[in-house]
Length: 115
Length: 114
Image (cartoon, rainbow over all chains, first blue to last red):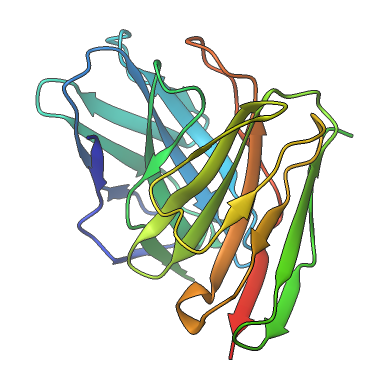
């Protein structure tokens, strides 16, 4: 069975600085998707960025980028120029291509942004 | 507007009193699922449905039931709620398949069982 681990329950960053959130996963599959979701205080689940396992190039969405290390099964999220609105819970998630739409989530990392 | 709706958003109930949390999507998605979110555990899948009349257990199905009589609706039923079912619940929908299809989440239902 696949598992996703986020070992940082809480992180803090100064406004305008860069922060990296860690995520590792375990799978025997070679084809899958990885995601980072943001959950602000409103509790809404917001897709931040996704990575297809077959792509070597790291995904980027504006200030958000990932470092995808397939062999190491590592998938970290880098937030550049952090803003107060980035404060939220962040979840790393895995999806097999063979299991419909099931997402397997990590435990979450609570990010606070200091002004 | 494409969306997944859940009702109620907040619910406080007592042990043993049957309840239903409704979920509806307007995107004609085949795949729907329920997750529960607990501190330190992330989100875990309760049940899922690949299409009308096709449902199956997720990772934490004990104490829950679902039905899929219509494509747009996927209610979560707690026949006899217990305090360990106090949690934040999310309904989600997407198109199934090997290609990437974004999963759309509902706004969440905060359930407290006393």
